[in-house]
Amino acid sequence: MDKRKILTLIVLCLWSVAGFCQTPLEAMLESDTIALGDQTVLTIGPADRYPSTEQLSQGGVLALSQEFDTATNRLKTVLTSFEPGEHWIHLTPDDSLLLIVTDVDVDTTSTEIRDIAGLEKIPYTFWEIFRWILLAIGILAIGFAIWWFVTHRQRMQQILGLSEPVDTRNPYERAMDSIKALRDQKMWQSGHVKEYYTELTDIVRRFIEESTDIRATDMTSEETIEAVGAMGDTAELRELFTLADLVKFAKREPLPHEQESALDKASSYVEMLWSKVKPTETDEPKEEEGHDA
Image (cartoon, rainbow, N blue to C red; front, side):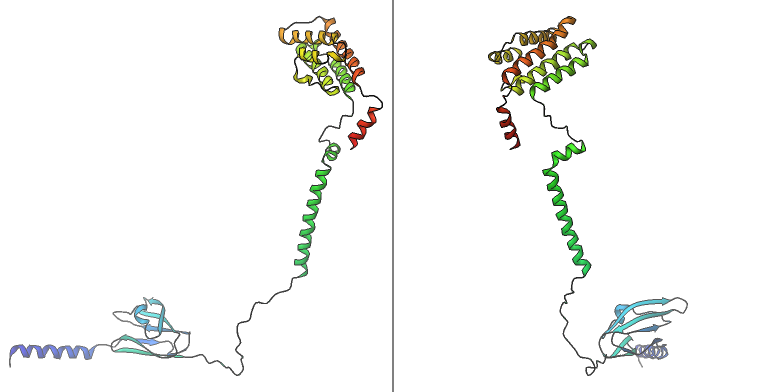
């Protein structure tokens, strides 16, 4: 016999003996019958190689997770299935396990199958309705409070002291009271000569503007004197304004008797002009009626 044929025959014999002596893979299912969607555990090992979850997910069987026990060298895999019937789990070409998945029985005789129910309207509770009523009342109350405050703002400011009371004095009374207050301040005696004459001439200018149609506060001294010239003698007014301009612009220091005389001249001119322009008794009711309107 040819030596090559003899060698081939020996190798085939050894391969057959090795295949015959190979140890089968140890594997077992915790339960070989499960209901649809239930789980069971597949235990494999010890072995040289272990299948992965992808390899075990076959034929309607799903491998969910794996855990390896190092003490026993066994691999535990959690299996499930959503397809009823018999499922063969192929571990190796020669090793397979059968998993039976039973279907869930539905008793249609005792349970009526119905369509999905529609949305059900739940009635409002007392507290839910009462809460909306309180909200509406609150909004109305806030709106009324805002309206009342706007319409009575001036009165409320006077009551709370947030605004000055309305001055009911006529122009003559305001001017004379201001001149008296300026005399009591004794400004020129304290060295505030310029401020003293500025305040005094401002009092006279405001009086002229409030009692006539002349915008005296926006005019120069000469323009003011010329504007009121037709209403009476302006000699005292001219002397007062001339002295005040000298103090404010030429830094003149008036004598004490000139300081006191300036107040007298201002008072005298206010009285003279008021006697010319003050409302008559027949005009006063008309002014009050127009004010009330």
